[in-house]
Image (cartoon, rainbow, N blue to C red):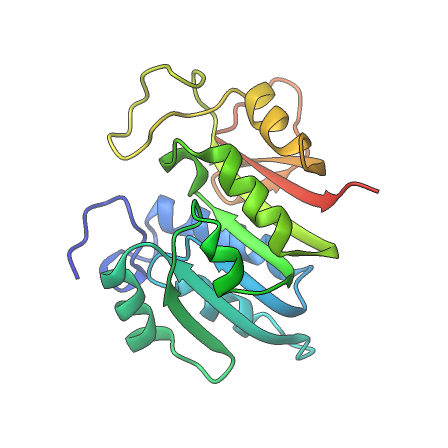
Length: 205
């Protein structure tokens, strides 16, 4: 599989690589909450499954389903991270058929995917239908200049202002926002510069 620098492929990267360490930190953050049936939407090559299962000391995770639109990434995930408690499949989060293809989950992880898609509202609506009533969604995206504004990554459709990201999610969920800088994920500290935001979302009501 070709490493372009956009998708994280741990086997092709130095353990000291900053982007790799940031991505690992996000999965470790989610692992503190995860149990039952987990969906990793936009799972890439599937390395997050290994992190979640390795962190599950109390054996609370029943199964993890990894879904990505890229066939090569899914095949790589099956070859590298195909554990007893994990499966990987091709799927498009923008399509309503994704809801029928999958099922309902206790927790959904959607890291660094939404900024790649123009149909962001449809994706969040689909996710809301796949998340169980008491479940949690963990979703991250970089801070940006705003929708419709140029961004530095050629792979991103846009990068959100925090107000835009909140508006997108609050149509469907109550949210609790965290910020990330390097491997630190925390509530925002005044005067500190952050690069990514992570929303922990729950159904309203």
